[in-house]
Image (cartoon, rainbow, N blue to C red; front, side, top):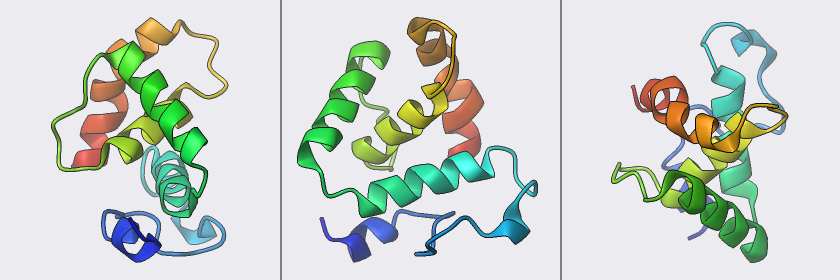
Length: 105
């Protein structure tokens, strides 16, 4: 899928090189959402993409069934877990409520 097609799934990343400072603090998890979409659109590493999807599926157990690409969902999850000292199983259990639901809305 080309960058233009991937960008069509994005609501927070619009092609900027950096997170727009004027959006800082205006939306809970706004930077996380932007960072995930930025990574999703700009990723060119097939191995990274497969690794992040495999990691997501191994912890969460299935794709979301939502109308967002599995890779984007997996990247959201990876960024949500980044730098966390919490158990990955706990993070997987709270991901849908804490991140995915607000992202979709």
